[in-house]
Image (cartoon, rainbow, N blue to C red; front, side, top):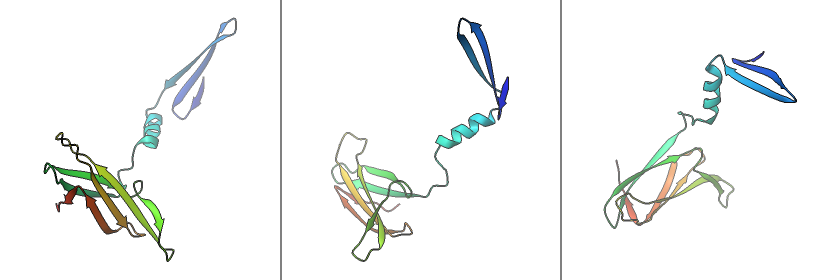
Length: 123
């Protein structure tokens, strides 16, 4: 059997061209490393937006991932800013669409915000 960083791999011929390959984990660190590849990083900067629906009054809180949710835009001067548009719908069967548009500077600091269908709530 050949070893590969905590995984034992075996190969056995059964006859007539058939083969069985067995993989046996000898150390869980392999699977931990694999799961870390697909899990989100806890240190990713997040912003939060809290709004109140104009129709039913429900308060909705939404997360903005400052690495993944922002789109880079350039203004007339060639300066880069980031833009994010979120459409929020509550859970109280109102189904009112609340559209939030956020603009951030190059350092991902909030510059401006606009809302349609609701009001911003300070937490």
